[in-house]
Image 1 (cartoon, helix red, strand yellow):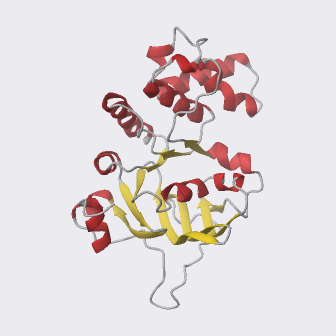
Image 2 (cartoon, helix red, strand yellow):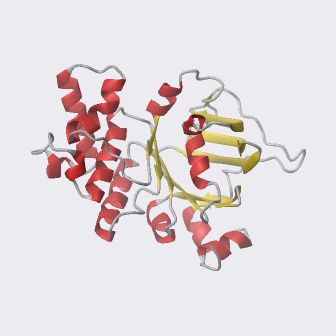
Image 3 (spheres, rainbow, N blue to C red):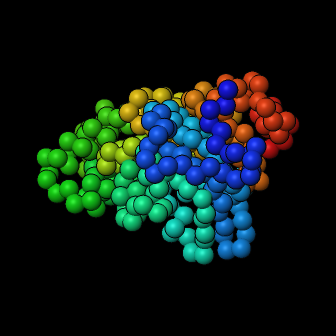
Length: 275
């Protein structure tokens, strides 16, 4: 049974619009009929899916299919790009993040982002992790220090850096830098963490640490990850969405997507026939 389906094709073919209250307590975010344009070029077409609380949702598909663009719509990050337009609905706990929440920064505090390339600031490890707290007005040194330690522990990094918090984050390995960026996102206590290929530039050992970390983080956070690594998606995710040419071809439980997909395009992609 595909309880994630939200498109009513039996009648009008249009997407059902959800109520503004949260009638779906298992769903942290719901996306309904999302279209996205760069200028006049449409790159996402009527995407609809539900993201479950405390689970990992993987987004797969060939390069240029719209995965990362879609990921950025989940915390309004695309608004930083000129001449773009989105239609449809994205809700967080039943609240429309585009129409019902005016403060974009409050959306991004609740829905954090970890990028493909680790992007630590030219600051110490401590100040990297504390950055979001200070931007949001947290000035109490004790509270900041506690939050930084907790975030580094949650990112599986505290034991490796606790004696060198004043060292530049640039002195760390690539895998450690990525975990600093994850800790920076965790420090402001988000509810959802978006990850855009967070391990694509890492060696196998560092990748394994990131995957182990994701497995632990989902106990307290909802995670959406873009990945080109089919094995990684199979290992770490609970649900998987397959994108192709801007369309969500199929969305279901990960095991089903990889062993018994409904769509031929999905089967062709996950078995390596294209992409």
